[in-house]
Length: 322
Ligand code: NAD
Ligand code: UDP
Image (tube, rainbow, N blue to C red; front, side, top):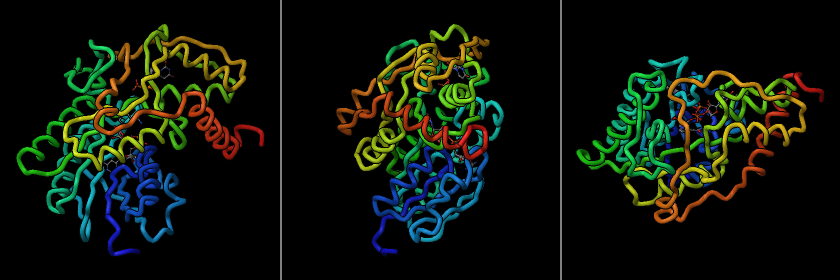
């Protein structure tokens, strides 16, 4: 282990996005401390990194005091249930990790004089009345709706990060992540993409909520990680959207996954959840200008990689023929 290697704490590091960040930061020569309480993630996501001298996995709930021995250069706060199914199942934990967890990790960054990056979300725009969503749009969020636990926790977290920046002079970065997908999502996390892929691979009907006219714009995880890497090292202190601008309706998305898998599954319609955003697409002008970043992986390629991963998962679980 080099004495000069930057040290980075990644909370939520055993989750979907966190595990990809751990890999990237190790590859960039960082020493990585992955901290997670495994509420929605699993040590399996980083199992292949254990044994690397520059990697440490720590089980800890970041809503309580966070202690890290030695110096830290970067703190990336990614801990939080993230799929609507997860945050509706863990509403209080979601609010606590967005509020108390952000407070604790900002306090740690202040103590260590580390640069802090917050994983925020397109959900801060709620059910948006401006389309596509630029960073200076303040959003349309129902604070007392069921999704409010996630949206408001992230809005609070952003406000707290800005307060630490302004009051304590901490270097903070805020990434507003738009629907990102890829290997290590959980097949049962309830999000449209793993749900549809699991259903298609098992030959079950694909459950489209509402008439499927709501839109999303799906970003492959590799693109997101590159955007985060650039933002962290940039001088941009205000929030930046990172996402793919390739917008699609959920019905078309389900049809695309049916075509890709070659299944003869049908589409069934179920009730649209309350406050489900009707449209979502990032404005990425700021990411282009400030970070020289834009998404490069096509949906076709990203979906194929992800499908290969889920097929393998189902084979290992004995649900698909070897
Ligand atoms: P995930 O559920 O796979 O990962 C979250 C991780 O945080 C899990 O490993 C979980 O166990 C951990 N965690 C939760 N509460 C914790 C706590 N109190 N202490 C320690 N660990 C805790 O979800 P993800 O998709 O990887 O999302 C990661 C982050 O990115 C979240 O903050 C989420 O809000 C944000 N985000 C993700 C997306 C996306 O499309 N994937 C979009 C917007 C924002
Ligand atoms: N959705 C769907 N069927 C499912 C799961 C989700 O039609 O089985 C819809 C959901 O209502 C939303 C969109 O797909 O309109 C994306 O949902 P997801 O949970 O992936 O993330 P969100 O963007 O809502 O956070």
